[in-house]
Image 1 (tube, rainbow, N blue to C red):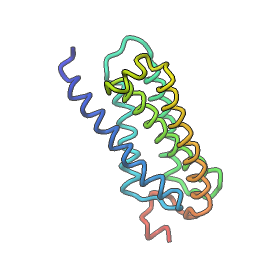
Image 2: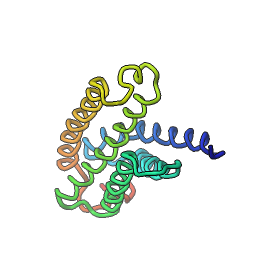
Image 3: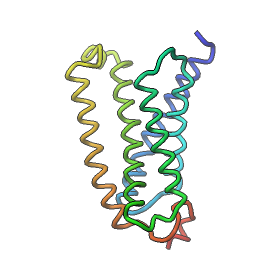
Amino acid sequence: MIAFIPELVIGHSLVSIIALVAGVPVLVALARGKVPAFWTWLFLITSIATSASGYLFPFHFLMPSHIIGAVALIILAGVLALHFSALTSNLAALLYAAGMVASFYLNAFVAVAQAFGKIAALRALAPTQSEPPFAIAELTCLIVFIIAGVVVTRGFIRRRPLGVTLAQPAEAAR
């Protein structure tokens, strides 16, 4: 075993938890047409760190986690590009808000899978992660994020600041 693996597991796990916690106020604010600088940057940085640090673990073949990590990083790259542009069109606002929700969903999807793999009580319910309890948990997660995606994107499109980049200070957005 590589010497730094325990520290990597702890760091990767902490960053993942921070991303999940930061995602909640970000989505609530987006639904209200706001982009809170602190929470947004905390969410983006920790989401990128979560997806990127997953590739530091030793592996011998491509796994589903690598594909999810790649998709998450592509979505986050698009969100970052939109974050620094003026969201003057509804399409840009839709893509930004949907990208934030999708990124949060991928973090939550992996967290559910990890919980079923690491927590004994959950692992007993779905030892191979192909049993109904695992499928129900992941389906519930998906449904929650589909509903959140609709609420967040509709709210952000209707209430977002127009003609300013999201990276500008709040005073400039007024």
